[in-house]
Length: 290
Image 1: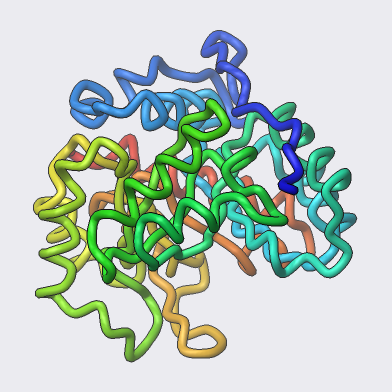
Image 2 (image 1 turned 135 degrees about the vertical axis):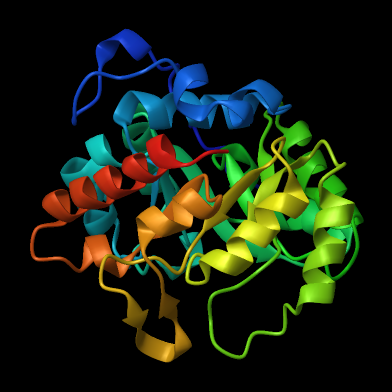
């Protein structure tokens, strides 16, 4: 029997509250065409949270204990707009502890993004949204490959429907790891099929290569989000084939959210690091032309 998690989506943002790095702007002024043309209510909610916090940062919360995850929210919650999780990597996971974690994320006004990378047929993907982790009950966003066809998106959306919630799918159009097989022709097909699907929140792009990211933005247009891993204030190669690009350049090239992991959670001062990434991403947004 599936455990129903007590977790709502991030609270509505009050723009007048102001962010931790200075007075906020109206989302329409900060985001321009992206705000005007967005067809997803979830995309607009993300843009509201990002504007209130002056941060386009999604923290890859890659800690393997519940205590470590709670600590991250407490330390950096004011400076990030979303948390990217891998629920199955938490060694001491329990349903009750995860429900508490979701409530803490909600209180900190964070979207929860489970980086599951679903890739099966729609029926199986729908079932995978349930199971012991019951992802459908607490995630706002999930990732998916489109290798099995668009039915994977329908299955994921059906999973949210099954518990009376709504969410968005980020399709992997590019990856930042060396030697990945997401070649340009595949990227083109993913964008063509995903751009017209109402269940697709947006696409995962490659933050380490601004030229490729800019081309992806031109192909995607302004209705869908592009979120990008592969960024770090220390540009270069990382562990296990990961490559890093500059976060400000990534946003200026078309990224709407930079996904940062070790640059924050392995820093000697995670809060200070999160603020630095927030400022870099916000600068990119205010200085880009589209």
